[in-house]
Length: 119
Image (cartoon, rainbow, N blue to C red; front, side):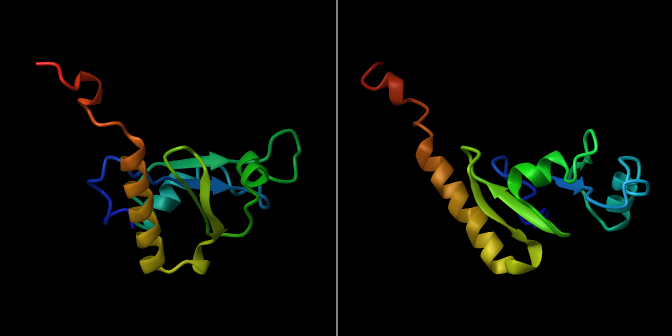
């Protein structure tokens, strides 16, 4: 997916390591090297437990679970897909991203909209 939309300035991918178990071994230091070994070329973040919470902040906020998990937000930040990654095909994921890109373009005013009629 990252390669398909690599040149798109309106699509952002990132991988976020969320930790709900194995907190002694699943550390911020391990994420980027592991991602690199798996060919991940986009930014990698880490979200672990805070103050003994059962879930990471991201997991609690988005209701995520399992690995790998995908959350897709539109241009307004609204969650449009939130499920186990295996529950969406590459084709369906591509269609979703393309649909959201079209919606975002409709939301943006034309560059010269405020200059209408001025020369």
